[in-house]
Length: 106
Image 1 (cartoon, rainbow, N blue to C red):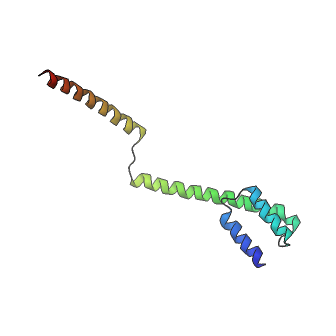
Image 2: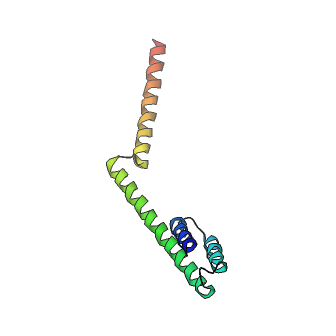
């Protein structure tokens, strides 16, 4: 029974990264050890896969929320901002070139 609890905890913690095949392999090992009934295995696999998908979505949402907080607190340049700055740099470079040419003529 302790082995079942240990494997259940490991499955619960690692379900985010486990594929359906890996989950099935682990559940089948539990079936072979007599910890899970063979007829329950497909249902256990489905529940673990579903739980993994839910946890993945929760993690994705948490990451998105944190990114949104960062965006609010740290102003980031938009594509438009970068394009405008690039145009200003081009104009200033052209003006510097003109001034350098005028100075060279003097």
